[in-house]
Amino acid sequence: MVQGTLGYLDPEYLLTSQLTEKSDVYSFGVVLVELLTGKKPHCFKGPEEERCLAMYFLSSLKDDRLFHVLEDHIAQEGNTEQLKEIANLAKRCLRVKGEERPTMKEVAMELEGLRMMEKHPWVNDGLNSEETECLIGEQPDTYRYGGNVNMTAGYDSIRGEVLISVGDGR
Image 1 (spheres, rainbow, N blue to C red):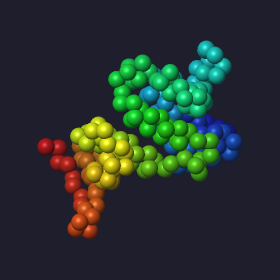
Image 2: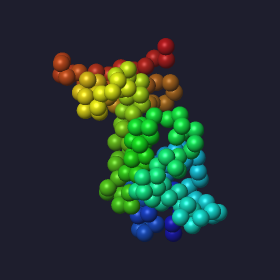
Image 3: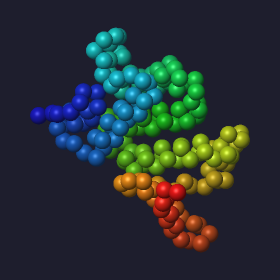
């Protein structure tokens, strides 16, 4: 028996009734699309092609109509390149075959990288992405533990050490 919320269900789960780690990735992709579009994952009203948000979003990307489906204030106020990156991440999360989807760790790292890139002063200086990555370097992994504790792990290539810092809520 298949159980779950319509619109968030992994297509593979619908066929096999087996949940996997990649089922959560699919559902998270739907959440990303909800945030980008401001629409519910499944709507029984409106045109047939718009009833399943995930499929409508993927179809819009394929037809190069991303900015037609984004929520107005997001399309107007958001960083165009970041929105394209997030849309591409959502697209990868929504792949029909679970094995082709990223892991949740990869998703989290990519979102953290986008967040860090926005904060870095070199990002909007007209450098291409390779130059920016070369200058900024790889972003550290950030882990959140219960409460107000953040832990960031990074690698210092000059010293060859793993560095760990724990935020103490200052």
